[in-house]
Amino acid sequence: MKQDMILILDLGSEENPKIAREIRALGVYTEINAHDITATELAALPNVKGIILNGGPNRVVDGVEIDASEAVYDSGLPILSVDHKGSEAWPIDDEERKEVLNQFVFDECKAEANWNMENFINDQVELIRRQVGDKKVLLALSGGVDSSVVAALLIKAIGKQLTCVHVNHGLLRKGEPEQVVEVFRNQMDANLVYVDAVDRFLDKLEGVEEPEQKRKIIGAEFIRVFEEEARKLEGIKFLAQGTIYPDIIESGTKTVKAVKSHHNVGGLPEDLDFELVEPLKMLFKDEVRACGVALGLPDDMVYRQPFPGPGLGVRCLGAITRDRLEAVRESDAILREEFAAAGLEGQVWQYFTAVPEFKSVGVRDNVRTYDWPAIIRAVNTVDAMTAEVADIPFSVLQKITARITAEVKGINRVLFDLTPKPTGTIEWE
Ligand code: XMP
Image (cartoon, rainbow, N blue to C red):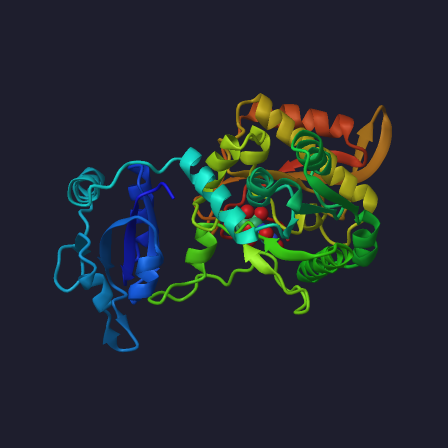
């Protein structure tokens, strides 16, 4: 293992991820750990150069003020105590805080700035090979950022010992299943099982109007299809997952209750007893993207906007029909093309179209039409808890409207959703 590490111990701070990010920005690897880390756990962490006792407002747990274990104080490692047992808090000013970190990390701990993607990838390849040996690994490859990067990393580490299963549930964006096949089977020569489950999902969803019911059906059916594929394969010992660091942090620490419960692949039956391989579990999202780029994945796969698990299923509002789902897919593709052409890709956090069930009267070539509207949603947000409507140039919206009404079957109007969150959620369902 090549990388030096600074250990952050959570002594009740609300800023553990922020400090972790700032240390990684200095080029030094860091991990957040619970305050009561044992001597054995500490000894198992490679290349620890120093420890930050990161205190803060959540310092009292079950009525007791917490402290680090004896092992930490006995380790002989340099310790920086912040907002803990009377020590000062972090300087609020960014530059001053950076100076404090710089001084501790480089002058006191003598850490080397050797945290970079090349070293990370080399270390992970070695760790994956050590964990997996000559056994086989299974991965549900959706084509989203996290599962794609896990796939690329595992292909590099163990090649054909990995089997990727891509379930096309018919609710993916235009071109996505084809891209998964092109990148992973054709370019990276991976073992890829492509499952065309479109009819199966759409049949199950027929006539179902209620959004949460739709989500449940899509989620449950996904697990069922994946499980069936897993049973067809012989001798799989490991399941790879695209868990990333925010998933782990958001699942809660010993001082902070969970922000949200998290499960990436929930609900596989107990008798499918896999060990987990989670090589990205210590990376923040932008680091996952950098890792993907370093592994040679295409930019549009690595920098894609967030896309909900139930996919276009929650954008084909109400009961899904095949023709209206096609209208969602085609209008979304045009929207993405025109946003890219206008230089808005990467500038707007999330943008898509939704198509409701109702129709309105229009006219085309002097003939009356009775068709659906396409609704454009384009929002900016930091954490998706609140969102504001993106300011899209009117000329871009006019161009998109002209194209959608001309090219997409069944659409005769285009609407722009002006509602921030709250009161609207980002998705319509
Ligand atoms: P809302 O609509 O709740 O969306 O404002 C916030 C963010 O979450 C995404 N989203 C989902 N992601 N499964 C997901 O994986 C879901 O069921 C789901 N619903 C919403 C949404 O796209 C937005 O980025």
